[in-house]
Length: 322
Image 1 (cartoon, rainbow, N blue to C red):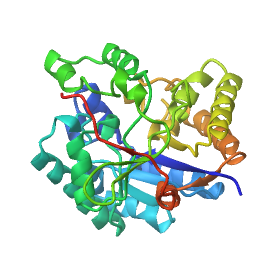
Image 2: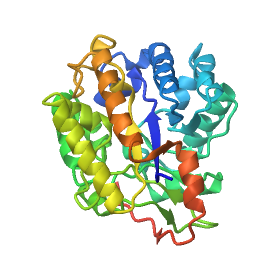
Image 3: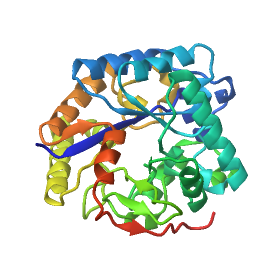
Image 4: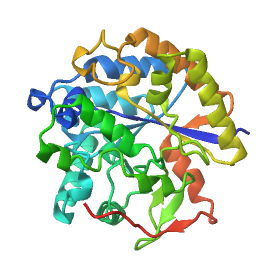
């Protein structure tokens, strides 16, 4: 049997990207989900894939979106909690704010899909010890918010150059995409040392040893220069995972399936010069390359397999103060 690779998609909406970028008009909550969700569901069904969708609670309560998101679980996909307001500075929240944020999203997603979430990913990979404590207290099985790479500050600097943010907004977003010390975090899954059995952490996988990201947005950016380069980079990453005996957790985003022809308001993102059709064709190739080496599963299935391994390392939560 092949080792597994979990697939997930952070269902960030147009308004959430605009909000983080500081763009006016996000308060009107513009949404591309009516286009995106059927498109992704068809794409996955054609390939027999089931994945985990991390849903933002605010989208679950938008008019008409409940029925739309219900299609995810009806098709057999897992749903996870991606916070309610999608603010990538959860590490600045108080415990009371976090409890409200996570619970509100949990209830909204349950009302829309009929499923209580058991997995969480912080927007912008934002995380703190208090977030973990709240998740553990609410009975979550796993968190998937860590991105072990040294490139977070570079990604944040690029983002700030593309955005028109006030000094206060830049300070609020100062932890976006993580810090240099995140590169010291493990690539392999582990358990947090918390009360109870310990919350499972499944990092977004980066290339072992080098800690270079290879989730689909990075591959699509490389494909702007050469699709052969992008697939070669992915092949090296997958080979490194096999050598390191690491079952990867691979991340997707809505803009991996949408191009400038679908949503022109987000042209500041890398890779948005490509059309949606070109992106989907390239993503199909990347996922076929993954499936040739690993067995694609949901994050819940990945977590279940990991829970049967008593030798998982344990780590004490340690985060820089905001």
